[in-house]
Structure formats: structure tokens, C-alpha cells
Image 1: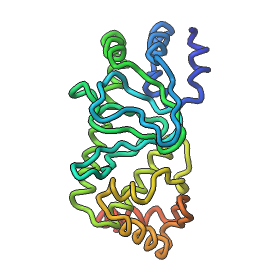
Image 2: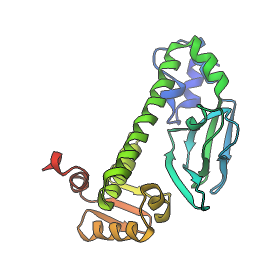
Image 3: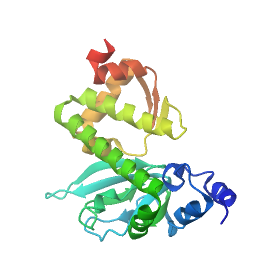
Image 4: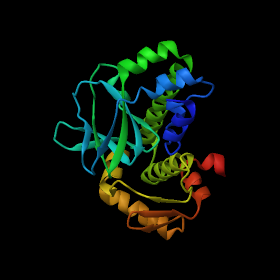
Length: 239
């Protein structure tokens, strides 16, 4: 496959950062393109991988939205993260060669499946790919730390404001609006992720709407005052 045809094949994909690191020649691009073993389509509610399943691949999300979750001892679903188009899912399995959570599609989705053995093999030969894989892993660690901080020290309003700001920032990085979003997850799933009860999430959304910070129409959220959200999360910096 030529450089031109790879660029055409990937032109509508948000994952160029992983699949097409800058400064590669035709031969290196061809080899990286060969990483994608298959593309998988999933329907809303389908599971991409299960907790305890053997880890064999990373998945680049082409379209759609996912949640990762674990089942607690008392049988409840604890949401551990939300992943969107343009992000990589499956990094949890690298440590012990098995997945530590379930990954469930929140809407119809498509992923590129990239066998991890092949990624490791190519990373040793193509330095740019190795750097990009490390960057993606590092980004995930930083995000995990952010969530721990969120759950450890913030009030309900701060948690929800930080969640909305993070979501629009990630969506904006992928070319979507900075001010409008459609929540693919339920209020209950947001509460599970943020360590809040469903009623608290609903009440906090209502308060934000009353204060003129957001406009809420079911799952459609329009941010009317980004600065107000930032002040809720970090009053010292914004005062």
C-alpha cells in the first residue's frame, strides 16, 4: 500500500496520532498500517472485552463511545472510565496479560483491533511508534491520577463541573463543539464514575441550569458559562 493510499484510508480517522506518527517513510507507514488486524463493529450494549479475559490487543475507537466498569463484591457496576472516538482502550490488560474490567459500547461503535505482540515487535523497529505508545500510556496514567484527585477531595458540584469540562475538552480535541455535547452515558453511570448518588447528579445538573451555567435538555448539554464551571473546580485560579 502506498503512502497516498494509506493517507486516504486514514483520512476520516481520528487516530492518525497513533497509526501515523510524523516523519515516517513509506515502508514504516506500511508496516504500521499492517498493525490493524481487523475492524470490529459493536452494537449498543455489546461488550468489547470482559474482566478476566486474556489480553491480546489494544483497540483504537474509530466511532462510538464506551464505558469501562468492574462488578463490585455486592454485585453493583462501578464505572471506571468513559472512552470516545479517537482514544485507545484496553491498556488495563498490559500489566498482567488479562483485562481488569469490562468494556461496553454505549452506542453503536467501530474499533480497530491491534494485536499487542505486533505493536511491541514493531515498536522495537520503529522508534516513532514506540514514543507514541509511551505517550498514550502516560496520558492514561495522568488521567487516572486526575480521577483519583476528583474522587478524593471534591464536593459534588466540583466533581460534575470537572467531569463536564474534561468531556468537552476531549471532544473539542477531536473537532467537536466546545460548548455542546450529547451525553452517551446515563446520569446513573455518571454518578457511579464520580462516586455520587443518582439524585445528587440530577440535583447538581438542575442547580447548574438554574444558575445559568448550562442548559439541559435530557442528554443534550449546552455550556453557557465555561468560566463559571472553571471557577467551581478551581476558585483560587479563577478569582
